[in-house]
Length: 479
Image (cartoon, rainbow, N blue to C red; front, side, top):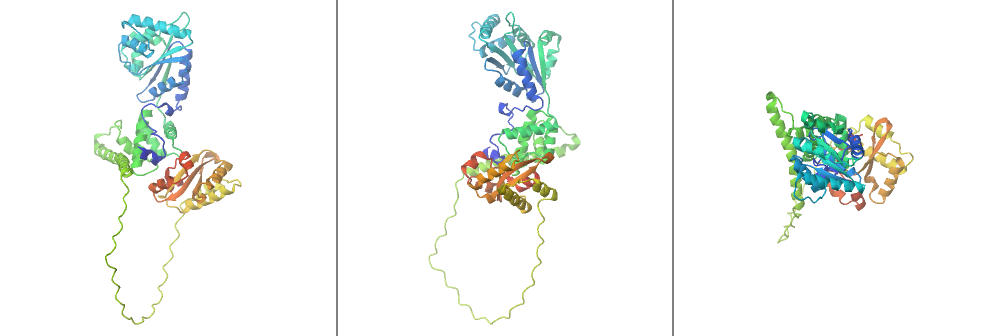
């Protein structure tokens, strides 16, 4: 796995499907929903409900809510509520570390009420978070309603938040559940992501995992991910991870629609095709397996290479006898000097690697009188004009700030650490005349050669920069 992360300049996997609160995405109303949940949990006295499709981010929202609640709040998290009404009471009591004897429901309820009253007197509040609430039997849901009745003469002692799939709304719509439904004062819904939101989400996850370069996923690739996933974050994670693995299998540093297509065909939730296209679907699935399997094999193969001992060629054995002297050459009559052959035609110069618009955008970024920056900008432009696209450079950093003085300070420091002629400064044009700066280092024949060079760079660079291999074709694509 470390080779996979190294290939893309990542510190950890970006698309794990298990909830990891460092990867909480506050776009697509998630941040606003979290803030509303916090307010309702701390200031309201009714039951709160959060509903969303499978894989839409409910559990992540629940975990982040637990983290963001103040220290004076005691939380009870029930992840498997498909139990009887008495077991719900026991589960809450166990989470609060209550000593309950006998196990009778009425005794547990009284002990729970005494505990909550004492906690309330100390200025503490208690919140019960129930995940997968749609799976609860009706009698267990009725017990939840009774728990919400625990109160003093003026205040509720227990706040309850239900997280569930849309089936929870169907259950609450039954006549037998109307009393519980009436206690719900706030209802939230986690909706699927739109196509632009999928792009923002994927970029956010990559950067949360340590990626610092320009976006790896092409716009068309992200559109395919959005369509195939239906905007559900769990499916987005699965497809993005498989697409990265397919790109890694090819040694690519950008994710294209081809890689996403392989990921979709390798996923269980890929849409079924009509019978007339079944043969094509089988072929596509086979290609997907090859691409993604190649990525896994590269991880395995590189792992073996790291473990194998270095092999050195044995020196040739010395000859037992000195080599025989060559026979004397027979005298040769002087031959007439042939006429000089005609000079071969000169090869036409290679066409420039930058088109006119790219060159103009590069030239439009002003060095503002900074001498080192001006020198490296000109060197970068000349290098990008001629370097082959398959050649590789090492990414140093990528920043939204294009302040010329700041880049100059970086170059002044770099001059004392590395050969400055190996440092390239690439201004990436944004909208409205704005720029971002992408600094890279070196020119290598392959990613392996680049990574070997990275290990020889100063420790400061190895600590602070991703040092991820990028082809010059990738660099030119972002101009």
